[in-house]
Image 1 (tube, rainbow, N blue to C red):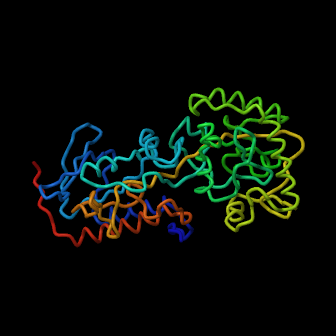
Image 2 (image 1 turned 180 degrees about the horizontal axis):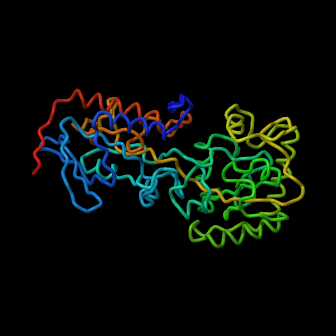
Length: 391
């Protein structure tokens, strides 16, 4: 299901935003930018009757609410301290707007709300160096592009099905090795040959034809590429907990390539089942174009025996987090005993998502937000009006 643009074509999130803005304008609803809610205002009974707001001028004002306050303020992807404290593994950024700093977690708990689902997010891989430059990255890597391509860890070993769903694929970065006390897959290396560089040009993170991206490393041989990778790991050590390229990286990578090439020839990935499920093939086909691949499995093509070869460092990230104050089926925020806090509602990524750890499909961030936003409005509309005293 897609929202429609004015010309009848399929739209996305921006189309929804524009549509909501038009309706607000038509109904006289004020949209105020550059404002930040600091707290909710509660009367003696605990009912929420307004909020405190600070603008760009630093002045704090009180805004009353006759029926209730609905929060839909996004998750906490861009609050590094909160991400370290709550998420199941380290992340390096995400696709959420920069203002997704988890404000409602603090505001809600101060009002008596209990939290839920704080360890989960809508996971997606992101280019490591792009996220270090700007934590709010422009796009996630929905599908590892290419057929003559693999992803390996710093040991030169594959560790997942590169074509699987991004939400599940990303969580492989969080595998914990108790014996070494480390995340062996924390930083992944997207490795590909000239065929993939040429035929999948412009499919993120591979640069468009004729363009050069600083995060892409190139080598005429595996040894040359490994040298660049080792230097890059060293230069980024302060951001990765001191990770280095393993001494056996090149021999292990050679072995990984040989095994993968055998799988590509017979069409069966005996390690991770790449291309064996419909969703793999769907995401592989979801691109600007597809080259002719004569192999029996369209997601795999043997990697070339000779260079040049390319590599991009990949890291775990989010579309946004999906934990926060818990809500009930009427979108009412619940207190520590599981009872609704009168006048307080929530929807979207700022509250504990009803999806739990799951990702139901593309748009699963938007669907629940729209659904529970409408439910919150209907619930609040049926509530008795409050009296707000601006004191």
